[in-house]
Length: 72
Image (cartoon, rainbow, N blue to C red; front, side, top):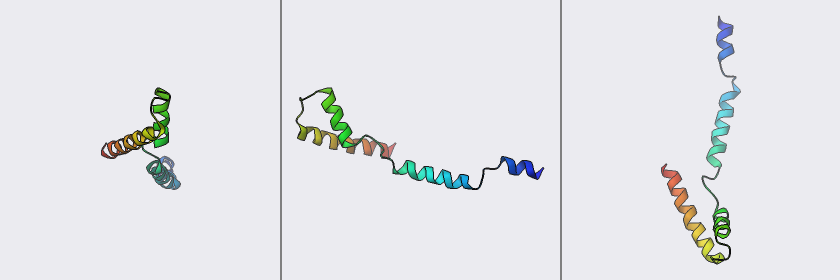
């Protein structure tokens, strides 16, 4: 029956919703931010690594993680 076929099709807005979801997912950061990484370093070893060094390490790790995410 034609009515049954129409019943099982996705509504017309479904493709728009899927496209919007894909756009939102693509715009999300792929990994932790530099600030999050620096905070994790500080949490693991409070006071052991100076703030400037934490920032440099966090920058390098964020770059490495971004490259790994792009490849995988």
